[in-house]
Image (cartoon, rainbow, N blue to C red):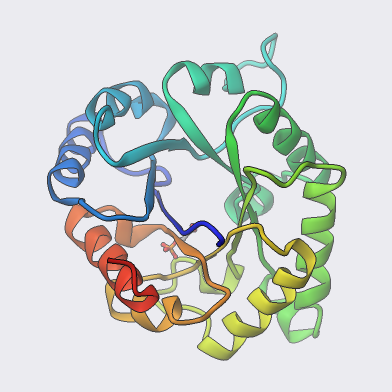
Length: 243
Ligand code: PGA
């Protein structure tokens, strides 16, 4: 059976005190069965590692450099992430691709490096609105997947389908589109868990989770509150019949 997973992507939110409070709130109320991951900004990883220790929540990072160490001012290595307790790392998020010009080849190097260091990569793929309108959605995600996972042992890899046009809008992709795109990805990567991301909220989580090829969620803004994150996980478990 494919693994189910729900990950919180806090992006660039919270000061330290707020991050600690939200993390503690999550430890208090989350008692879910499926694997749950929180990916805070780098500077909070070590403190959150202490808070999550012994809880059901795993720690993830939002990005990393592919080199182990060296003269890369401002970058964070996989060794550093491991040393502060990370199990997962989000790679190739659309904000990294589009705002910070990360290429398919950068992402490929990061995937290899993450796996080498025992980190599970959550590899994000997804088309922009204009690519979708031009009828190129499948071609784009296929290119991204093939490039990122070329020659990679897929054990431990997680993929997130995040249509760029659904991220941060409050309106997720419609069920038909998610079915189509996850079905398409499934043919390419078979047993790899495929998460959906892009405006997942408690009000739409059940419907999205009811899609067979949706194995979990990557949640942005709705993961900034422990309560709303918990509701999303509850809805997911209800839809999948996890109890
Ligand atoms: P969102 O972000 O849930 O705020 O749309 C999802 C993501 O970018 O991972």
